Image 1 (tube, helix red, strand yellow):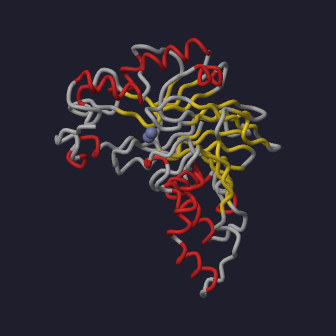
Image 2 (tube, rainbow, N blue to C red):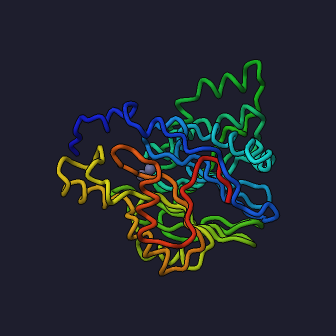
Length: 320
Ligand SMILES: [Zn+2]
Ligand SMILES: [Zn+2]
């Protein structure tokens, strides 16, 4: 894929990098049992005010994590300490044990080492359980191998760390199905297109809320079925209007259209899905907004021209 060297490529020169979206917000009724937390709302663009792709569905003070982008532990710490420390016990290190990975693009997994190792340093004894597409086991094995000296030193050196909390049980998902059930939640995985990479969305159903957390990417029948009547859909979105300014996807406008629309979701497509399936609220994360000069509201305004329902352009540590 050809890339043109422009100021959009030199991300630190873009206006987007200066854009602080503002403080985290509490949208939920604190008496609810289930909360959705947008931990990291960034694309790969290194905005210093947004951490890498990550989220959580918290049920009865227990977190089910989704993706582990750059800075995931910092993002969890931010959410734990926001809103008067409302979620501080929900994100206790010992409870950070269950993760669902949407896909293996680096912006969704580069924080995985710290999610495995950091809570262990602070006393987690239970091994992690990680769900993800094919390749997740290999990824985890390589990471543990890379950190072998650290793990060995912490167990056998002065720290005397436990020998269980660094371990990981991986479940690779190869077909759409229910992948996890316990007394709090049922989690169903479904595949949907995102370029050429295996890409999963997850539907979380608890006693009081239903939530679809999509991977990056396009709508297919399974994605649409999962969204039918849900309270919330958390999804990426990519601007149609400003696509010609995209710093990737080819040189010509046509090339960009062909390539980027095989990977990402258009506002018109998302609006049509939400109207047709009766989704309660859209929560936008991972916003690809190529406006020049940069305006953070540009993509939300574009989405509004297609959709009049409940919708939030989310920030790190927002709670729904
Ligand atoms: Zn991706
Ligand atoms: Zn991504």
